[in-house]
Length: 270
Image (cartoon, rainbow, N blue to C red; front, side, top):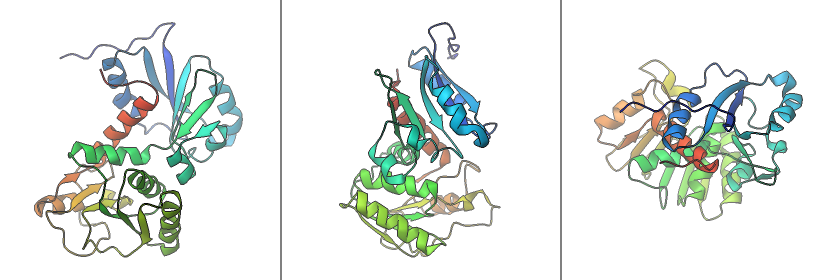
């Protein structure tokens, strides 16, 4: 069935994805068909805001009257934080946000949705994070957001492995502070005893022989998610499928994040 065209008129509300650069962003082609399907008169546009002029430019952008909200990508996720009047629990825990919406009173609410995409990828497999024993490879920005979102979703334990042990320990401590019901710890890359393995490192984008740094044997009771968007089948995912593991890739995470962000902006599915 042919997709209806995007509607642009005097009543159109704007969403902007801001970053520096923005030539690589794929969000408009993911978000705009969903917006049209939901029947909303809105459009998502890329907007290049240079790092050097960010603080001056963002004030003007936020003053645009028909701006519904902002999606934030590299390198502005930390820098946008003080421009929000209030920040949700995940954003507070991570210390960065990747979305802000204008409220009816003109104030701005921000939060972090990178981890929500992972929760959405799990949902695409008919799974949740509740009660799970999880190993996350990578304690960078993506790993941090994912850890917080999984802890908020009821994970039982989260082991965090990073080549920088101090970074892994710091993330585990923050998870434990913000979500004391989840046991979080810096750990080795051993998959034994885990039922969910997440690669939040860029290793999957390396040549086919490169593997994410896990140790031990994959088994059918272990769900494996590799968050890199390309290639669609990484070495880790290929091995996991060979071993009978349920798997999801970066595309499933991107789709889940898009759904969560549009819901945040008040644009649901039709």
